[in-house]
Image 1 (spheres, protein in one colour):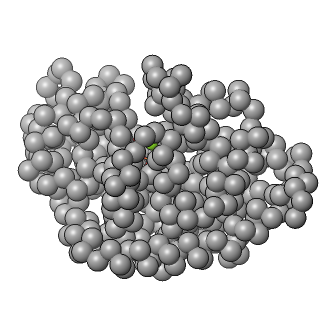
Image 2 (cartoon, rainbow, N blue to C red):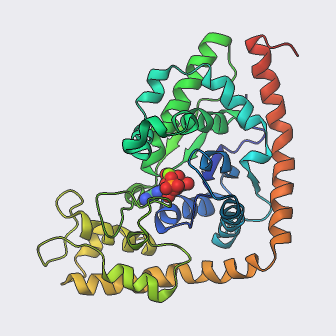
Length: 331
Ligand code: ATP
Ligand code: MG
C-alpha cells in the first residue's frame, strides 16, 4: 500500500476529447509541470473516459497524440510516467470490480453525469453514468495520495476516497485513501460567451473557449467578444460580475498574480480585454512552438507512451492480484 518512493504519488489525467483549453492548462497542467519534481507522478491520457460519449475514431486517435504532445510541450519531462489509459487493461478490470461495489445512489449524486447527460439521460451510455467508478479505479490502482484537479472533478475524487475507505473496511487494507487538490482561483474558468458555464473541451461552444492551440488572431477575437457585465468599472466579484471576474482570473492565472490586485490596474473593460488578449497569446506561444515540433515526429511520442505503459503495467498487475484475492476470485 505504500508508494515506492518517499514522495507523495499524484495521478493527473485529461481526456483526449478535443482541443485543450486554458482551463485545462491553468487549472491542471501548469501545476503538474511546476510540481513534477516534488511528487512521484503519473500522467495519464484517459481515453476510456472519452468513449463514454460517441467519438469519431480518427479524431480520437489524433486527439490522443495531440494531448501527449501538449503534455510534453507544456513542460512535462519525457522521463515521467506518461501513458494512455487503455494501454493498461487493469484500469478497466478494476473499474468493473468497483462498479459492482459502488452503490447506485453514490453515482446518482454525481453532478457531472447530470450536466453531461442533460435531457438525454435515457440515451446516455451506461459508461457515462459509471465514469466515476473508472476514475476511482484510475486513482486507487496506483496507490495515489493526491489528485490535482479543477473544481469540477473534486466530487469524483471524493467518491474515490469513499470507495477506498469502504473497501478497506470490508476487505482489509487494500487502497491508499486519496485526496483532491485544487489550484485556487483558476479551479473553474468559465466560457467567455457564458461566464456561468465551465470552459470545456466538448461543450460544443468554440467561441467561448480559449484553446491552447488557437492562433493569436482567433484568441484576440474571442477575448474581445467576451461577455462582460453591466457597469463600466473593473472589479473582482465572481458572483455579481462573473464575466469580468473570469477575465481577471484568466489574466491573474497567466501572470501569477491575484485577480483582486489586478482589478485595480484597469479603468475600462476594453483595457482589461487588451491585457488579457496579449497575455494569453504570450502564455500559449511557447507551448504552440514546442507542440508543432513534437507533432512533426509522432514516432517519438508513440515511443514515450509505450515506455510509460510498460513502466505502469507491472505495478498495476500486482494491485489487481491483491484486489482479486480480497474478493475471492480464483488466482
Ligand atoms: P470535457 O468537456 O471533454 O469533459 P474538460 O475540458 O472538462 O473536457 P477534462 O479532460 O474532463 O477536461 O479534465 C481535465 C482536467 O482539467 C481536470 O483536472 C479538470 O478538473 C480540469 N478542468 C477542466 N475544465 C476546467 C476549467 N474550466 N477550469 C479549470 N480546470 C478545468
Ligand atoms: Mg471534463
